[in-house]
Length: 176
Ligand code: S3P
Image (tube, rainbow, N blue to C red; front, side, top):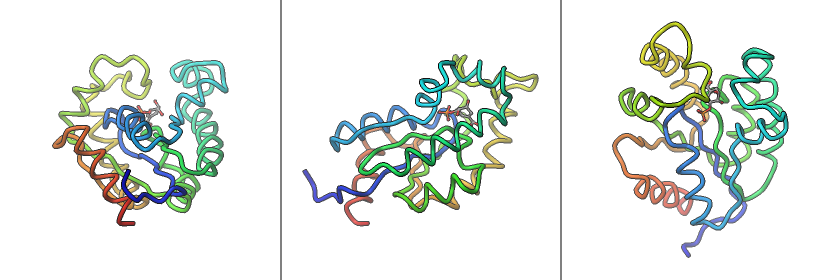
């Protein structure tokens, strides 16, 4: 096992379909750390899935729950955390992420994001009147600067294999 600081949290940010959950889970397994996914924790605590939360409480209600969970999870030690694609919208979330761990922005091009979210039914923001490519493009334009603002490292997941991405994150952690 390489010489990896054991108290550095790893927080994954990036758009829907960038691979945060898949990469986060595998990374945590390799590093023998606990993995958390903020969306799953929100669903467990609420007893409702994300689409139902959006339906009953609107996006604002979901964001409130998201902020509380991000604040809580970022206070843990030695974890890998996958955040929801909109977590960086809130400045307090950004500060908690940037201040309490190493933030990895998993970036991706539009085509890959579209492909990876194509069959998804669990992302209410993509099920609106406009086509998903228009929505995803707009979200990317709005959020890319925010992801970059809090990131320590940016890795393009549309150009690299999962194995390569995980290796790059671990290398960054070793040299931090
Ligand atoms: C959202 C992304 C989703 C989830 C919610 C809102 C967003 O998470 O938090 O549907 O605003 O981009 P993933 O990025 O894990 O899909």
